Length: 490
Image (cartoon, rainbow, N blue to C red; front, side):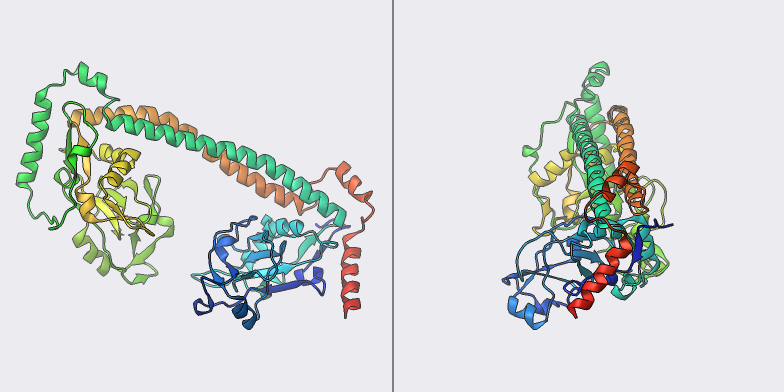
């Protein structure tokens, strides 16, 4: 129930004749010019309440005028009519006359600040109640969007001007405190990652099991047994599909191993090292998930954002790279790495993802997983020039097959896993607590916005102070003044 001194209004009802509410412009690739002096603001620039300042597209002033583009002004409100999230709004912060335009999927609102404060409307649009209204009016199947026509039907709660100022000040005070807490939590997360990488580095330098080797009286026999197993495995290996051209590995430049360890190429200790399809099969609405690098996240496969392929295409891909339990997946394009141990015989295919086939007689899958997760292996890939590409990084299949692995005996591998997990279990508990705190912080942010536009954020004393302001008036009178100003302008 809206307060009696508030009013609900559509966007067009709070805009004066010198304001605007329209979409950005249809600017095609052929209209753009990298040497132009007018920047094209894109959807990627529109953050959830903040301007990201990310894009780098331009057109000339002449072309912008020819297309009759709307030039942006500082403090215009920009609303993204496409996810994520749908309907997110931000204030445009850049200065410059006739220097910026935006794309058609961004709505522009320009209001007069003597009636409506831009920050108030921005927070209003981003509030949970407004987001809910926007979601109900979205259209499209694969690409959700809200039209400006539908956006124009939404009524937003409008407070008296003095109260708008107080609400914005209170929101920003509370958000500042939240942001400070979030910054501390994210700093702690980074420290945990540094600690995690330090543990892994020590593990693969043999430091975590130094005492174990002394206690076990590690002798030449361990090394000979490992060498014998490797020789026997590779002698009996049939049908290896090793490519003719493999990168050259400089073993002399690798870090020194502890006694009893070997540097060995991945394809000599894994059943095989393969990759998924390089082609893009035809996608279907329902079928077999096609896992790519983007689906490898924090040691797990994210099935929430996958494309599907037919069973026929899946069988064809599986002939090349069948994925089984305890195999390891490894991103090969874009973000290199993000390894995942396959926890069960999942029914999916892979594209541009490396596949280390298990060989538990020689290498424990968890040992290999932790090694592939470490900064240690990333440095080796860079030093050995296995990672290529400029605009988009990638590692070729040959690079994966020749990846040097520090190999101790199976017994020591198991001890290393224990040492790693005993240290990282505490780390993971702390990280879980941090993630929970971050989720609570975001929920609190939404709660603040919800209360603000239900008229419940300010205390009685703060509301009374607003009513003592010289320009205080009920919101319905404010709306009336906007209508009168528009009539006079005509």
